[in-house]
Structures are given as C-alpha cells and as structure tokens.
Image 1: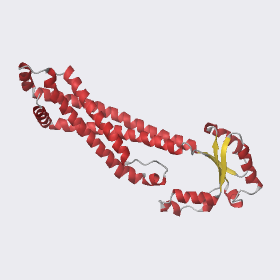
Image 2 (image 1 turned 30 degrees about the horizontal axis):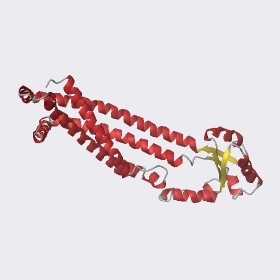
Image 3 (image 1 turned 135 degrees about the vertical axis):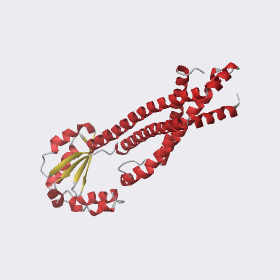
Length: 300
C-alpha cells in the first residue's frame, strides 16, 4: 500500500467535507479541553491536600481585650489555659501566637498584596493558640471543652474550611468531566456523520477498489486516518485553549493566591503533562468512532 496515495486520499476527504470537519474538530477540542481542565483541577486538589495535609490546625482565638491586656500570655488566665492545653491528651502540639506575631505572619502571607497590608494592623488581629490533634476528627471535643472559657473569643477548625474548599474543587472537577463526556458524545456523532458522508461521497472509488481486489481494511484506512487527524487537531486546540485559560484567566484572577501559597499554581509543566493525555484521548475517540461507524453503518 502506497503511503503517499493514502495520505492524498485523507487530504482530499478532509477538504471535501470541510464544514463537517471543522465542526468535528471544534467539538472534539471543547470536549478534550474540558477533560484537561478536569485533570488540572484534580492535580490542584491533590496539591492542596499535600500543602495543608500536615498543617491543619485548630485555632483558639482570644478576645480582643485579653489579647491586648496580656500580649505575651503571662497572666494566670492565659498561662493557665496554655498549661491545660499542653496537658490535654487529645492535643499533640500547641503554641501561643501573640498579636504581633500574628501581624508578622499576616505581612509575610500577603507580602505581594499591598491592598491587604493597608487594611490590617496588629491591634486588629487576635492572639491565639495553634493546636494540632492526634485525631483531627475530634475537633468537637476542643470546642466543648474550651468554647465557653473566659478569655476565649472563638474557635476555628481549619479542616472545616479545607473540606469546603475540596467540595468546591471536586464539584468543579465533576461538572467539567460531565460536560466533557457530553461533548465527547457529540464529537462521536459528528465523527460518525463525517465518516458516513465521506464514504458516500467516495463510494464510486471504493467500489472500484473492491472490484480490483482491495481489502476492506485498505478501503477503510483513509477514513480512519481522516478521523484521527481531525481528533489530533482538536486535541491541539484543546491544549492551546488550556494555555490561554492559564495565562489570561487563572494567573490573573488567582495569581495573588498562587503567589501567597494559599493555592497551588497551575504550572506550564502541568499542561505539558496533560497534553499527551489529551492527544491520545483525541486519537482514540476519533479512531473508535470511525471504526464503529465503518463496521456498522458503512459497507465498503
């Protein structure tokens, strides 16, 4: 089989059904783009868990008055509470953070955000106890024991915030993957239609080829390659779209959170890792769609 002839047939087929080909490429590109976005969200979720997994704390915030009156936790009320926390069998680690220390941490965290630095002062923050539990699920025990204590303003479980964050990220991932599946189904149908139209358009040539002894596989191969080429072009568009989303959407809207380390950034390396996955998915989707159509609906 001459490769030049086969690829000439592929190019001819793509040109003959240019509108159908463009529609299929765009639909496949959107489907793969959504799939890639879902994969990036999964990566971001995993990275977030890795960042915060061993840093989740319970914060016991002291009242504003207590924070100002005893900045170094030397008076009986604060020092007694610290001693009690250190002796608590549920707690693996505890330390006191003054207003000044909290302010210094705040300035480091938002060093790249002048607007956030302008709105905060040391007096606006509260002193707190940072607590790690042997079993993070037993947050309620700490709330029950210390929530009503004199000098305690509020108790915050960072794990609860992270759980809500993961719910949002997982919801975004699931939504994008569901949309990707719907778009993939649309791409499958478009590829099927494209192959049927291409086969009908070239039915005379294929009938002559079969009459002179060409195998079924030989007559089907150009149609398969057409679909795969279109799928790979769609994958390239999807990858380009992801780069655009990263540059013009994620980096601009979430750049401050990425720079401060609150959320893990989506890097170029992540996109490079996703690109071959999308290329393979595009080729497989197109090849399977074309093969099924040729076997079930087209007699050549």
